[in-house]
Amino acid sequence: MTDSRRAAGRWPLLVAAVAAAVLAAVTPLHAQDLPGEPAPAETPAPQTSPAIATRTEVTSDADIALRIRSIFTEISALRDVQVRVSAGVVTLTGTVPAAADVARAEAIASRVAGVVTVQNDVARDLDVDSNLSPVLGKFGADLRALLRALPLIAVAFGIALVIGYLGYLLASLGWFWRRISPNAFLAELLATLIRFAFVMLGIVAGLEVLGATALLGAVLGGAGVIGIAIGFAVRDTVDNYVSSLMLSLRQPFRANDHVVIEGNEGRVVRLTSRATILMTLEGNHLRIPNATVFKAVILNYTRNPERRFDFDLGVDGDDDPVDAMATGLKAIRGLGFVLDQPRATAIIREVGDSNIVLSFRGWLDQANTDFLKGRSLALDAAKRALEDAGFALPEPIYRLRFDDAATIAGRSVSDTPPGRPSRRPPTTSDGAIAEDAAPDTHIEKLVADERAQTGDEDLLDSGRPIE
Image 1 (tube, helix red, strand yellow):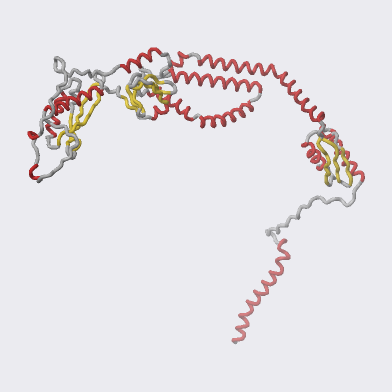
Image 2 (cartoon, rainbow, N blue to C red; image 1 turned 135 degrees about the vertical axis):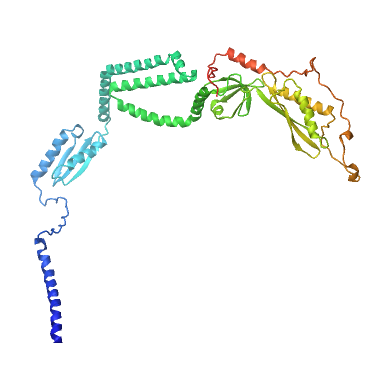
């Protein structure tokens, strides 16, 4: 019973193995006949060059030679080339005018059917007459073509001249450009751009008539490269030119203004298209490039006539600094040129080893008072007032102590040795100081005279708002 069951369990396995073996054997034979199954791809056969024939026909060599000769006959440069064909090998001999014709002859011969290879023995003809004649002939043909084109060239040149003349005529209307532009410098720039634009338009129109616009593209491309190189070379000049334009539009100062530009002090004479001209306080002309002026920090003393002066005075370390400040301020405020508003002030700047430094400040009107003169007179007045009040203006002091420090506990104001006799400054009948504090107008007059005498273009315009 057990053996029969085992036998029954082996039968399905045996049947499955036999079926798989039969299917594997049959599938390769009939795979291509099964419907829906793609046929296996065939491997392409390698391409081979045409084989050289084992026999040569005499008529074939003659046909090849005849065909090559007939082709060379139609080409003037290859008419003197001799052709010989044997067993499919073409031999070329003779001379040609140019070196390029040697390779040309070989290329033509190798393309004829039946040619196995080409033996190229063609050489260039170095005879002077044969090489010079074509060049002369080509030159003569070009000259004749130029003569035939002279009327057309004259018409194109005339059109270019007319367009360019119209540009110059339009640019010459200076009154119009000055009317529409804010200043003379910009008007000149606009006129120059108009002239340039019309000249370029005339050249383009002339080349269009001649049919040589391709030449214009090449010229403009080369001009662009050259322009970039020149731009790098003259970038400082271009920077100065643009700065001049911006300064003429912004108007940072007026003529005869007292300014300080990059540490250079003077009065403005004029603003040109290249530089700003100053007259220094010593009466010298100073020329500053506009590129420097445009980027510089400009200090203008003329815009606001009220200007503050200050100076320092020292008093003895034992003196009362508050009383000293009050005494000095009273003398300063009593000067006629010192403004009441803003009022003069004083501060204690520092306390030294043997003195106290006081700083006095006051305001004056530069339109009526010279700054340096006013400051000097105020300093002198404060110094005299302090000395008259018994304040000592100390000098460097070195103290040598030989006794007990308790014996020199300190000095009061009454212990201070009397100062020098007071020297009162000369005064007028109304008590004002007699020294002249009026501003020096000599440089200002020199600038005004120079501007009146010279007729140079000035970019400064008093009618435009100042920056």
